[in-house]
Length: 141
Image 1 (cartoon, rainbow, N blue to C red):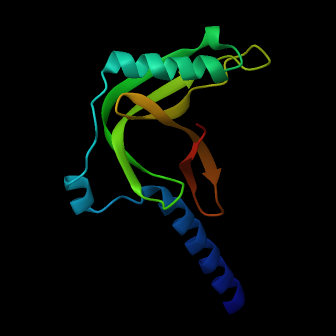
Image 2 (image 1 turned 90 degrees about the vertical axis):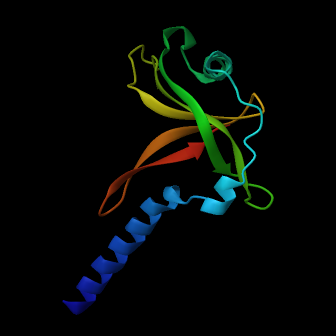
């Protein structure tokens, strides 16, 4: 019984840590001294993000997008050193038809801009662990 309880606790802690991975943030000092670069307008951000969506959706003419506001944001670079990059982000909910002709349901996207240029796109994926359900964002561009 004790061994089973230990296994359950270990699995719970691993799932909990995996869910917390997306909440890592830069230090307050790093945020205070960050250079976010040249701001981007809402219209320009939407135009660039929409061009990206047209290039990746199966039926781009069916897209329905709800745009969030552009705001300051940050991301951790993947290569070479994992340093924090600062810029502007815009969230969006995207719904479009799939291969079967039906709407697939709204999917969350985060568009990341630096100096007025789209640099990265993340899409939300729901992960189901043994003890929790949580959303993580995977870089797709």
